[in-house]
Image (cartoon, rainbow, N blue to C red):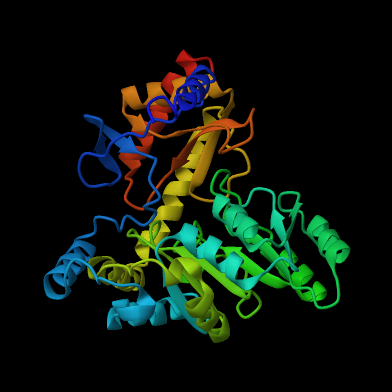
Length: 393
């Protein structure tokens, strides 16, 4: 076996030479607006912990209590012996949160997306997908073996043309989009896409991973943000971003949920979430309801930081949400920018090809409800200083 994987060393060296190699930093303690990574205390602009719930005392207490009472794990998949009362309670609560008939918990947002697309469609069907949709949607589409058509980013007219072009008697069509796009922070034109889906008789699906807890009343998501309840068939989300824990979910009609219980492969073949995770997720929904000021602080911080970056002369692209890229275009320059920001006290990741297209490299910032004005002012000062040093502004 020795040497059989040596070709990977060459590929890694190639990534390194192109400035595309990824080396994750190590979190040394709890996450938060300020956190310790690789031995350095930094302002954390790299986390998806939008509402600051991941280390909330009530979340920690709920997780600890559930583990002490119910154990560290369930010991089985959901369809055999791994469904607990609390799983069903969380699903009921999430259905209410998303204004849907029913909901189902998956092990991650990735498996929720991939497993649902693959379970609902087959090789006779067609998927019409936004060009910048998440990798989990792309993988699910491939697993389904359905025909895949890609429409230009946020172009509802192009989506309409593709649905018309691929229509066949008896053929199912799925129109799918992210709610908030994770690399650019822009919002899907969901009203236009819903109208297209309804006109063409297509299934409408939205991946609301970065919108759940962020957009809409009480963080209900993109569907609520646009007032489209009852007009989107499938809503996908994660429990690992604004909710602050781990897992994913599907919300939609009861028949969809029952079908996924029977044919959703990640659900069928993965051990169910442990009690600590489920209890913390339920507590998160309570905190979101009890502390609405968290969502207000998130958006106040978002506006302030976005304005500050633009005043410094940085290109923040088309962002409309707490995800705010600072587009630098060149891969190597972006890696250097992220490294120097970290050395000066701000952690924001370099996002390069293949995560984004070549020539669109950026550092991606995400503010949270936990950041103070002092945090953001200090971060902006460092951005300005490092940007001048590197000739990026």
